[in-house]
Image 1 (cartoon, one colour):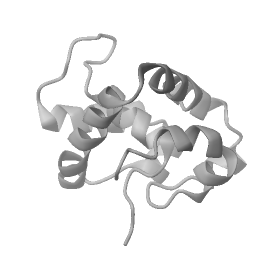
Image 2: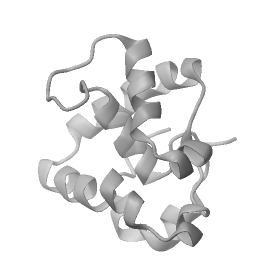
Image 3: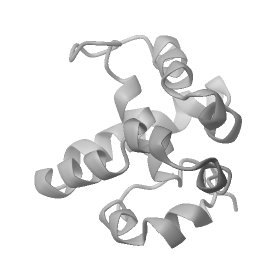
Length: 122
């Protein structure tokens, strides 16, 4: 079975989509969250990590809630390491290896950080 949101970068984008752009205020509209998610992804990420609206709405709350339950030190370290800014800094060759489902690139290049998110289902 395919695992959605197995890429650390997509998980961080999901978490960030729950906030209004440029604000810490929560976004309450699930459709707007999906739009926020798509907007957070740059062009190369969008091609690799975008998901359909219905799938996003089904899985995103689970990801967001589990981020909130993570140990705060681990969560902060994970969010800094697998940030969208760090995505932008990756060479195109590494970006092309990342996928939304069963992301082997995260397991290979970011194994230590992915271990923090083992409790995050997809």
